[in-house]
Image (cartoon, rainbow, N blue to C red; front, side, top):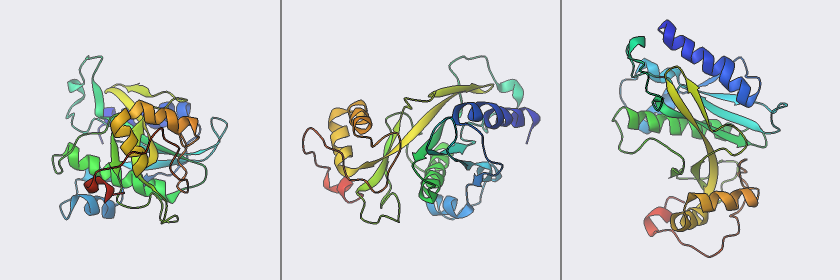
Length: 237
């Protein structure tokens, strides 16, 4: 890896992340080849993809919950030389975001979902899959329970939200980075959001303690009215 790219990586892992989340562990959880192939299909693996990872951060003085945050989505892999890093104050670094999950206990399922979402976004960024890069308000069904320890849970999708109790954006030499906080949602909640908008749902999720920490065992929150998903979407929830 080029020295300038390594320095951007170092700043994110050794300065910014510890400031936001507290002490980081020595090891990360790399994106497995199996996860890449499961999402993208059989194809040659770009060595850069194997540098994407999830960092598992245990509870500390910064917060009582477990945090799972991605690493390297914001690395400027598309920049070939340091001289290409322009002065644009609104430029986004890499894909422009990193994602995080928060849970009440250690959660291998959070790692699995983040790995899958990373593989999907790689597919979008490299024009392998159709879709859009995530942003605040993006959502996605996960085609099954959010945790296989709770096969009957209605929490079968995810919503990308703006963190309310940690900084939602940081800056690297290569540009700005949004921090997307992922919250698990149910089909009923998605149906409500599609009518009322993400902000309305996020407010209810926080009010009823379903955010920012995701509990895979919870039921749907109380909603102002009964909304229904389309038949096509309902199949994925």
